[in-house]
Length: 116
Image 1 (spheres, helix red, strand yellow):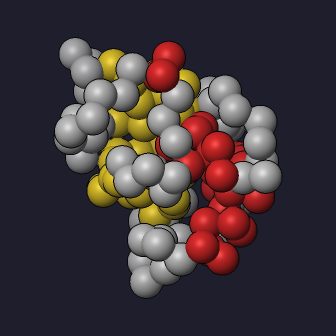
Image 2 (cartoon, rainbow, N blue to C red):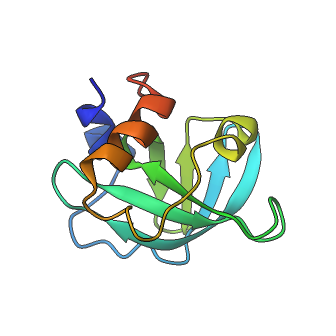
């Protein structure tokens, strides 16, 4: 079951209406980029991270369930996955990321039910 991957955890510190665009994103082993866009849709919340030169400008979709903390003062989001896990994630599909259940199932399945 991957549905729970698509919701912000209460302990992560997300507040409804918070604009995460531009926040730095830190994996468990280092920086991976900045938030390009995000959603807080119920059951489909995510961030899209622009990885810049780290993996040659690739964007990655991260379900909200992998976010371990949001530091508003530092404008930093920490995710409970390694850089390698994120680098090997399913290809970001800009046409499917918003509302395509099959794509969400693929990405959610990759990250699994292991919440941070």
